[in-house]
Image 1 (cartoon, one colour):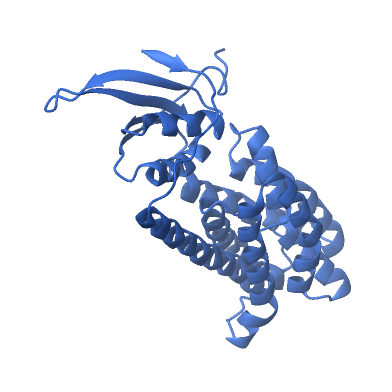
Image 2 (cartoon, one colour):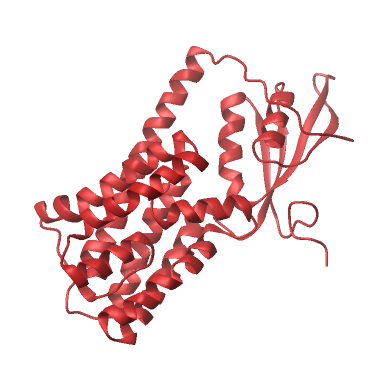
Length: 305
């Protein structure tokens, strides 16, 4: 069993079939991001904003500004996101931020115009606990879909994504909870009561749990065994892009008698979906065995205590 150090990734030219799959994947990404953005907008327009609940992030900031100035929530959502999108272009890359622009545009347009046009029913002057619960669920579903397709909904999500890159052992849901605390505190002053802040905490907590469930499926890490003739290219991607160690296991096909190198690696739960998609891009015929890892100790993961 031998381990390889970090090397530069060499991209092989894609076949027409792989190009078609890449285009189809991009289309699916955009459609799911739009669906996620609509879910977020419905939660904001129909549940939290009408009940004086600021759910954190730019959505919460826009709700607070709307309460104080009567400027529309969608307009403020777009304006606040402009400088944050520029920061994202610098640090997160063009691909992620193109998806972010689509998400921000969808949320802004849907919140101010589309949902009013279709006369989406608004849950107003009802049980604020129900409003915070269902608002949180819709936020979690929306953000989960957006993150799942490697985008963000802009705003503090860009900051959350940058923090997650530096501290990958913290889930995006946990980071979102932390960055939303300031917005929740501000909402108590603007609305003039502590209940608005408490209901916002409920919405944010549920959002984080639903988002993590969609993104990760469980709270464990993942261990992968990857069988592929393009093992070197896959290993380079894991080491270069994910900054994870790779071990080659020497194997032999029982039927063919051929010697094979099997990739063995462990990744954080938030890296799993990205790695799985990348493996299929490099080798659509790759055979992958994935198992939950209850705990991963060592360099890059939790240190052994």
